Structure formats: structure tokens, C-alpha cells
Length: 348
Image (cartoon, rainbow, N blue to C red; front, side, top):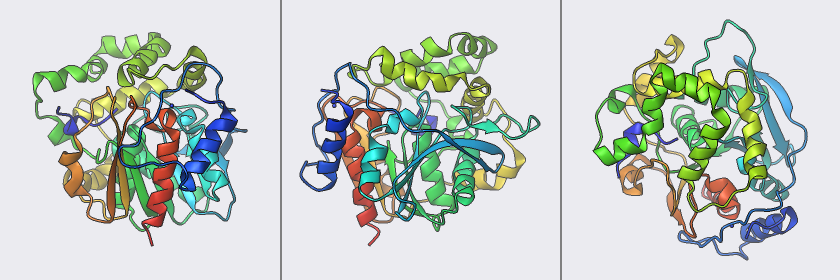
């Protein structure tokens, strides 16, 4: 979920109707203003599943991903967060594909079919490592430049890619804005209410928390879904489809390291020291960017006013109303797809 540094204070239609809504939105028929309203999806029929998962060797990983749309189309990389998976984009990806984009949705390290190529590789998950995975995936797929977009861990990954490799990132869509942090900044205490929201991070800092997460991953992550999106009436089938990705053999190690590293309780890898030093200075995002927030996000997240100055290129912020929580792409797919389409136009 969102970085400690920054914490302070739709009827689910069937797949065909959902894609129709998104496509109409992208054509400008459905309004998606900054405060566009989105009805909550009811429990019930799921959108169609993605096709076969592809695998590609990329850096230290064998990355599992889905790909849609024409190979010659503008590339879009969609990154999920914790505790979610590629199905957060089950409606966004095909909608963008129908508009001519080449859409790639990878499982992050520790999720789904993404595995480490060597048993000797440390099972680490500091922020720079996840961003490097994104660049390695682009290299492996022969993608020189892409729009990068995501939420939660995925937003941070996209943010970092845009900052460290702006020549590779055509534009950015980031839910909850600027999520780049540092261990030094995260060491500073927050007001009690903000610390309270990070209960799971402190839990993960203990041996009991690591053992508890390993023993109760399915139920633990369902609780996070409920807390992070309190007005989203997702059903068992929707959750279980994503929960299957948590059975990855490295999942627990990756999650625990990610949160412990943030608090300075776990070492990172030396190869990322220089990148982390740059990120600790909170460098600006210079590529065209759209940031988004749901009006019912129950997870820790910064106020947009806190990060506006970090975006120095063409920029827009959108508040998505109607009870939209933390998993914005899955809860409001039309708005997310529209943002990707609009940020592409911002590149000129």
C-alpha cells in the first residue's frame, strides 16, 4: 500500500457491457471529469478472464504477464499493487486494447507465475528493485517507450520508472500520486491516527507477523481489500480469482521484505544503492502525468496537495467519486482507462 512517507491525514456489469462503457468513455461519450461519478459494482458475474499467461525472462525474473492489443500499438504497462494482482486490470486492459494500445499487465515479483530465475537471488522487494523489473520487462519485450500506470505498489513502480528512466516512459498514470519514499523519511514518526492506519506494517516487522501472514495469507489479504475499499461490494469469486496469485512461493518473503525495508528493518541490495539515493531526494516527475484518487480510499494515502509540486510536466489530477476505494482500476475501470487515453494525448 501507499508509502509511509506520504501518509497524513461501478452495478458491476457483465464483461460486454463493461467494455462498452469503457470504450464509450474513451470515445468521449461517457463523461470522465475530475469528479466523475461511478456507481458501485454489485456482486455477481465476473468479467471474462484474461487469456493464457505468457512468460519471459527479464533480468533476475521469469515474468508472467498478459498482453492484449496490436503489437504495433503504443505500449502501455499496467502495474498492480499489494494485495492484488493482474485482474485489477481485467476490464481496463481489453478496453485499451480495443483502442489500439499494446497492453502488458505483469505479475510483480512474488505474485502469480512470476518467479526468480535463480535460487541464489535474494528475495527482496525494495522500491528500486520493482522499478528495475519494469525496465527489464520492457527490454525483454523490445519496448523502447511506454505509458506506465498503476496503483499501490504499482503506482510507486510507475513513478520511479518515470523518474529514473524518463526516456523510456512516455507518460504516467498514478493512483494516489507521488509515492516515492526513502528509509530516512520513513523513520520519522507520524501523528497517532496515521500510525494507526499502518498497523499491518508494524505487524510485518515482527516474527509473529511474518508467521501470521504466511499462515493466513488468504484471509489477511481479504481483510485488507475490505479495509482499503470499504464501499466496494466485491464477491468471493472476484477476490479468489486474485488470491490465487498469492500462492507464489516467494510471496510472503517479498511482502515482508517490502515493508521491513521501508522502515529500515531489512537491508536492500547494493546494486540499488545509487538509485535509492536519487529517490531519497524526491526527484520530480517530468513526463506528462495524471494522478487519481478514489473518494472512498480506506488505505493510507497522501492528500493531492502534498505531491502537486513533484509533477513538473503536463499534469492533471482526478478525484473519482461514487464510493471508489483503493483498487481504483478494478472499481472504476472506465475512469482509469480514460486517464491512460488522456495522458497519451498530453504527450503531443
